[in-house]
Image (cartoon, rainbow over all chains, first blue to last red; front, side):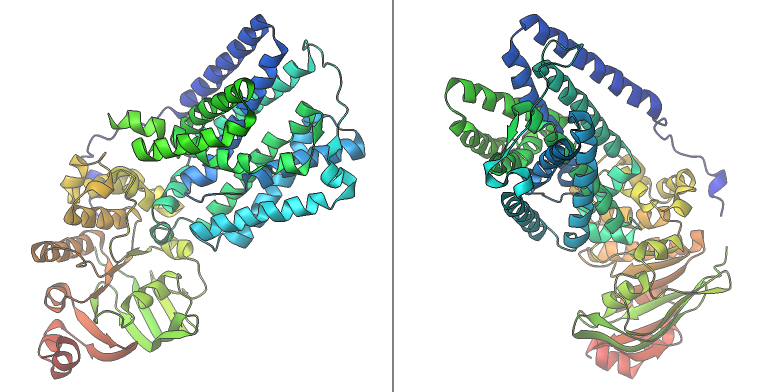
Amino acid sequence: MSAATLPAPALPPALPKERKHLTYWLGAAAVAAALIVVLRLIGNEYGWYAGYFVLQYVVLAAAWNILGGYAGYVNFGAAGFMATGSYTAVVLNEAFGFDVLPGILGAAVVAGLLGLGTGYLTLRLRGVYFSIATLCLSVVLQTLVVNWDYVGGSRGAYIIRPRSVPPFLSYGEYIFVVMLVLAVIAVGIGRTVEMSRLGRGLQAIRDNERAAEAVGVPTLRLKLIATTLSGALMGVAGAPLPFYAGYINPEGAFNLAYAVNCIAMPLIGGAGTWLGPVIGAVLLATLQQAATVTISSALNLWIVGWMLVLFVALAPRGILGWFRRR
Amino acid sequence: MASSSALEISGIDAGYGAVRVLEDVTLTVPAGQTVVLLGTNGNGKTTLMRSIMGQVRPSAGTVRAVLDGQPTDLVGRSPEQVVELGIVLVPEGRRLFPRLSVEQNLRLGAYRPVARAKLAENLALCFEMFPRLAERRTQLVGSMSGGEQQMVALGRAVMSAPRILLVDEPSVGLAPILVSRTMEMIAEMKARLGLTVLMAEQNFHQAVRIADRGYVIAHGRMVFEGGSAAELQDNELVRKVYLGL
């Protein structure tokens, strides 16, 4: 074949990958540091808690996006994975007196394994059937926890948290910073996935799974990696929750609002892009937090519902998709 | 460049669950030839292609590829392993990735390590064979015409560094002039890459133009084997079973 001697058409210059990654991490660190400084200047304890609430959703949305946004598999069981993380942290605290950081690691492992197992059992199902299976998973897990006395059953479990963790001024600030770091990592992982061969394979699966198989994309393996990664990150998002609130019960941990928000946020921001879930989470969670403070938290799902309707009608590809079109 | 890769399918049964689609199908694609598999809808052409690719597992019989004189059993291999061996399918209805660009579609053709090693070389070859694709490199494939999409599908196969090319009904959904053009593109690909080609097709007259030999499949069984294109063309059985004349 004479291909070697052909004049190659001008290809785009190879992406300077390392530098692009470095830009993200430096940029994210700068934004994170700025956030801490601003919240410190405001000096109100509530700021840390509201910030935590928003960041928790950034992690959840970024985690959901890995499977739902890139591979197109809609996971309705986010609450189940998140609660798995929360309760792993509770168990580790109860059994070994572990603090939030080892709790997060444990949550990542347990929720990741749960993701792997769920993927293995359910990924033969496509489309809406997969979604229903994940929804069932969440219900099954909730029933298990309700009947598990060690973690308090339906009464819930208390965690006695330290008053403060130096050098942080308050525990609220500490838990906020923990979640901030998790958010930067989760979004960074999502971004790395998007730019990697894994992400391209997942996008191929989303667009046409049969064709992906035919060109040699190892579809099952990639889907399992995605469910594991996505599950682990959702567990990570849930692990600090009992420390944040000092208390957790099944009704709160398995709240449907987590599952709904996890889907709504990436869709509104722009699913299948690393930045979309961040935008969606910041927008929706801030709105919900504002409604909680000014009116009532009962309005939260109502707001999400309206936003979803609005976006599906006006900007079906999310905020990012809307901007990219022009 | 002559091909040294052949395909030998012998006595396979295959189907989906309780439904048996193929019964005792035997077919040989000699090295460097273009073999056409003729049959109307629902006779098992696609199932045969999927059996070769490892997407359907035959319940009996053997599927063997001869690569560089080395016989390799394909039954029991996963699709990605079959692709890795250089056996590449252009699926029916093209099955592209509509929300990805032309170049992203092409690059996905080179997902396996063997093909990735030759990515730049094959991409250049693709753009040379299909200059239209170079012009439309950043366009989303879902917004292209049927003929252009067919080029992307063939280009994606080039990217997989094929040795044996399987083409499933390339004429589906194309205007007659484009069907004819597609046949020429397949013939050109075969000549340039030194391929062995198995093509399933309904469009008898177009397919026979580029075929060295052919088979007719009906109700999951091989009903005719033609040694040459001419033999297929003047055959009473083909006329009756297939063309319905």
